[in-house]
Length: 304
Image (cartoon, rainbow, N blue to C red; front, side, top):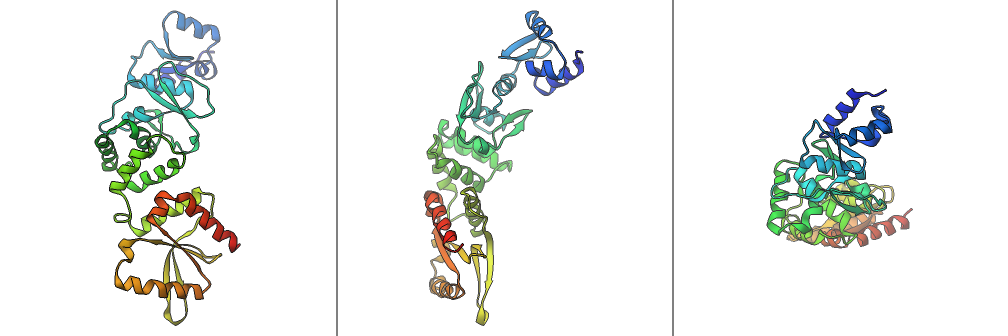
């Protein structure tokens, strides 16, 4: 039995669209009834097996969602930028992203494929599945001028949709693949994020996330150690069970006489307590992340 109430409710949520599967499975239409409505113009095909009800007016969002429904992907790139309402981004033909193995095509949209579908961080904007804000900014970076990209990023930051550490995390996760867009994205990050502006705890959280992404156990942040004769130290990150500490070295934090003299003494005390200390710089994190992860993995294995 046809359930028109369900059909109309679906269409209202989907910018006037329904799919053939929804009509058959959710609303109880037969194949003949579907074809009849298409032939008489009540349902207008927008994509293969995606239709616009005649009672609704087609919009740009209609095309974007039709492509998403057809491909089972997410709106991405400049389409996502428009849906996120990022300043300076315009979209004409919709763009969607699907898993790399997908063979699906679209009549109305450009289809992008990704090997990192699990990191698309999909959410919804205006009822349309869309890539996460940080991923969206990375995706559009190579199509924008330096100023346009900065304007788009600033508009997202001002609305508290994203912040610099979030952008650096998405850059690091995707730059390993050498993907398009990482160059201009990295250039922007280098101008606005680095050891001079990043707090020590903020940097620690980024390294912690990177190690977990690399398949390693999650280290503890700002781990406190006490020893004999009143000795105390706080490690940026630590694996207490293995007694492995990770120190993040920065000229900003270390280039003064007190630190210069205290750092070796502190290291000696920690070694006497059985701790192995690994030291990394901002460049290790930003440019040699694979090597950093491998070094920590080797250290953990040596003490397991």
